[in-house]
Amino acid sequence: MKVKAKLKNGVVKVKMMAKHEMLTYNQAKKRTGNKDDANFITHLSGSVNDKIVIDMSTSQFLSKNPIFKFKFKGDEFKVGDQLIMTWKDRKGNTKTKKAKIK
Image (cartoon, rainbow, N blue to C red):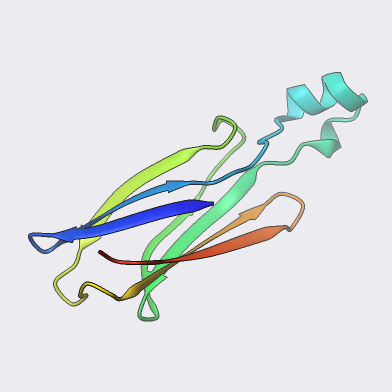
């Protein structure tokens, strides 16, 4: 996972790439004959200083290695604070990445 966060004019802009195969139900059925082998990111969350700044559910309709862009008010945050991003997939695997706000 790659994460960049920049604070400018009171707004933090985040760009994140989640490295994941994102195997849909149809792709799984073609590969293994069993659609239950599908595996894709189902949940994404992010926090700064224990305050949640993004919390979203996703579906199988994201591309392989999806890129997420979002922004949030950064009035209470400063350069150097840590953004912690976490995703969880259908099989229960999780990945967490920390990035300092620049």
